[in-house]
Image (tube, rainbow, N blue to C red):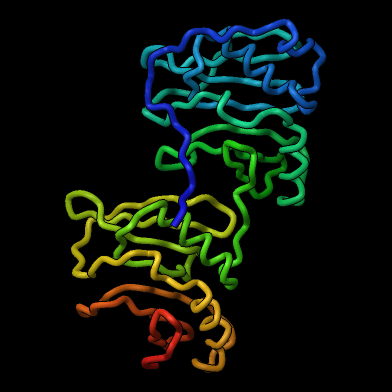
Length: 296
C-alpha cells in the first residue's frame, strides 16, 4: 500500500545562505498571493537568516516569517514591506522536524488559499503554516481567523483529501496512508470513536504503533505498551470493496440503521487468515475478507 511521503531534513547544522537575484526578490508592496512572490519572500528570508534549516514558516498576503535552527537554537526572521528583519519569537527548537522550505510548492500562495477556502468554506484572514504535524511529517496547513477546519497540503501542493470511509476508494486510500508502506501489520479497521481508518503494527520493546487516518487529517501515530498474541498479515490482502459492501448491508444484517460502526481486521484466536469483525448497535458480525458472513 502506498503511504504519504514525509519531508524532513534531519540535520541541524546551518546551510549556506541561498543567493537571491534581484528578479527573485519581492517588491516592498508585493502581494504574496501573486505567483512567485511567496517563494521569493522565503528565498529572501533564507538569505537573511543564513540557513535553510527551518522548523516553521508562516505566510499571509503581506508578511512571511521563517524560524531556522542555528546550532541548537531557533532564530526567527520576518519579511514585511520588502525587508527581512530578525524578530523575537516564542518558537523554540525542541527536536521537531527540520525541513527546507524550498521543498514546498509556494509558486502560488493565492492558489493554495483559494483551494483551502473551497474545502473549509471560509477565507477570512488566511494564513499558511509549514511545520511538523506529527511523527516527523511536515505539511502545509491553511488556517483562518475566525477559526475554521484546517486544510492540509502535501509538499507538492496537492490537497490531503477528505475521505469517505463508506466508499471503497476512501477506505482503500485511508488504510494505504495509515499502513505507510508496512508489509506486516497485526490489525486494521475503522475506528468508531474518531470515524477514521487505522492500522496497527508491532513497534520496538513490545510496543504497538497505531496509525490513524481521519477523514480530513493526515495519518498520526500513537504508541502503547501492550502484549498481543495477534499474528501478522500483509495489508494488501484487505479488500476495501468488500468492506464497503458489508457496511452497506449492516442495517439489514444487524437490525440497526444508525450509530457508529467499528471494524477490526485481525488474526485473533490463532487463525491462519485474518477475518473482519464489524460492530454496530451492540451486535458483532464476523465475515471473511471477501465479505462472506461467518457468524453474527
